[in-house]
Image (tube, rainbow, N blue to C red; front, side, top):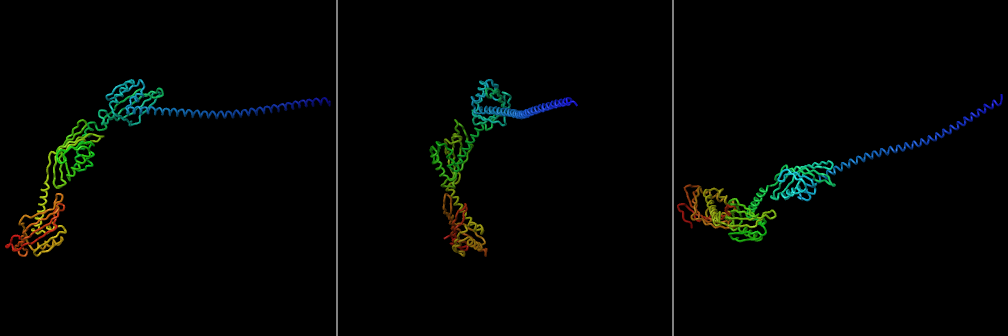
Length: 517
């Protein structure tokens, strides 16, 4: 075979192989380049994705921030609205407060220049436009009332619409009038205030004062005046009552320091000026009387002259003397008391005690003493009568437990020193006689002991003759002449026997009766 023939295919193969080799190498190079490019692109893509993720995260964060900002804006808007509501409400309360303190300059500072005040009811009823007219109206209102207070029974209603706002409320004003300063009145007002916002503040543009009701929430002036008169009258009766109970500590504070007490008649007659002299006078009066009562013969009269109050009355005084406490006296006085109000309290400025008559409305002390002596004598006759009817319980009721009975002469002679012995002695006496009569030969003699105008003890002596009928023989009658002495003690206006002497100075048959010796 021709070498050339073999060489050509080999060369061709080599060329082909070389070409293939070159192509392979070239492809690998390109692939490697592509891979490198892909790697760069992949890195760039990852960066882009990462940046996108960051951007997306930032976007979401910004969206949340925007939402938070929007929420905060709404909150701020709400807070601003609430704050404006409070501002408007505060302005309304400030307006009512300025009315209460009656400060015209502060009241008028709240109005806009073209404001309108609508007044419904009362003497100021009308529509007032412009600050000048409104100022005149409030000045008239303030001239009517010496003091003003207010309160709102319910929370006012506030509404705001842009630069306009309104307040609606019920407001009660409590007032005292210049004409009747002691009378308290009320005004129930349906109130509306319209505000406009200008120059950073709210100003009243329209106002409605609508009087829904009014009246008096205290005594009327006439009623109060009546109460004052009653108080003066009560002070007068209290004054006389303090005299009656003889309490100088209650009496003296009723006087003004420079008061005058004019006493006409009696030992205290004179003009006594000043607390010290008046006190001394009443102390002298109280030292004279152990007890005092009073009453007015007719209702006292009261008159008012130049804010001074005058009480006139006829006052009857019933008194018992310290020297003669059982004697009741009477003093009729024409009484005048002049009162003046000092720091809200009536005080006596002048008092006239004018004695028009005086006397006794009971027994005199001597008459009372005689009555007591008569009662003592009656107790003696009761004792002898109880003996005559032979009632031992009545006889013994007149004795003290520690009394003594001295029996002189006869079968019962002896000294009996206690209640049971005395009772036994009288029992023996009554057993001896079926009937007893007595009489006194001459009026009994009485000797009394007196303390404070009252008898405290006394002694009765008498000649008593008893006629007795024998219990064993009814046809036998005897006489017993007794020099009788009874000592009495007075306790709780009762007379009790403390000592008794039954002195039998003579006795025998009735046919032989003889005089006392």
